Length: 86
Image (cartoon, rainbow, N blue to C red):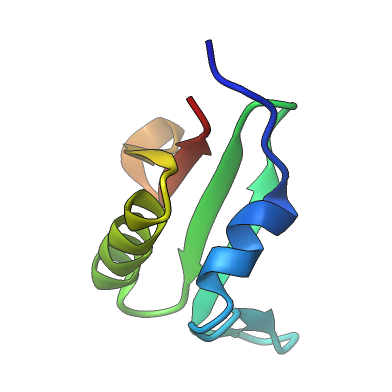
């Protein structure tokens, strides 16, 4: 069973990469996390380069001991990573 994980734990691993930011008109490319219950954090890449960005984040998080599953949101639009601790 997966253990409790916090978005700040994932943020600490990804801090060397640019963090995304909404300018009011468009996204500055980078990552962001969203807590999804007590046992999962979702990682998104905003802006261009989503596929490459998510792959970099996946490799970095797996190297840090997290379990990472790539996924697409309903409708197949946005890519994301489901991150857990096992």
